Length: 267
Image 1: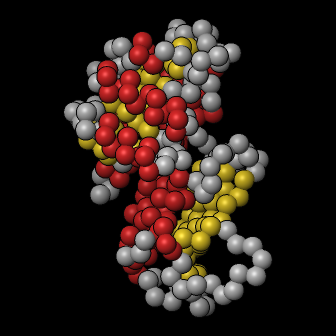
Image 2: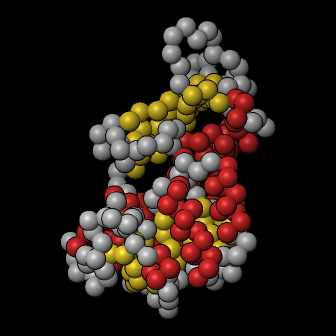
Image 3: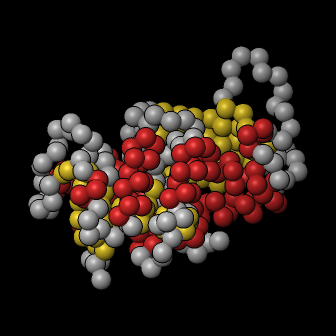
């Protein structure tokens, strides 16, 4: 059976990558492409955004777009995603959420939606990044004593949240493995006379510039040696292909909150 997929934020960088991935997938069909009200792309053929003819007009009506849909994929902004959630619950459509930057209330709203429809919610849909999560858990347990931990991430100049959702997720993996609370052990940037590094902290450094798709490195710095686990994305296609795997994973689910560790069988 072909999965009817709705893409939110169709004109954005990730929206276009998602539509290209759906167009290339033999088991998927672009059912609808959504944009914000007032977008200059409304009414245009979504295929034009990826240099093809798709026969699907870009719309700003989520309720209409979800009719007959099997999956809704959203890599937009928290406020937009939270608006879309209610429409998906009402229509009984599964959700793949790659949006980052949610506050605690937003995360609770997603968890509540998962009581009615199946949801994959992950800060990064890349297969490689999710493998890195697994490797980090082991590394953190082995390098518990005598190693300082720093997380460095770099993204394009247009990214609006920092640190990235992926960097925070990497920090959460490390903190859980070490039995620490990231909220009390994280250090976000340093400036001036900071004093010596406090033992047990997890540092974050953020770079923004150019068209960097997404680079993440977790550094375990000891005395005389350093271990680094890195992932570098050169194309948004990696996130789009991961999102399609998530949509396929949800095809036979009735409800529940999942992440990419579930999708990839890494849990």
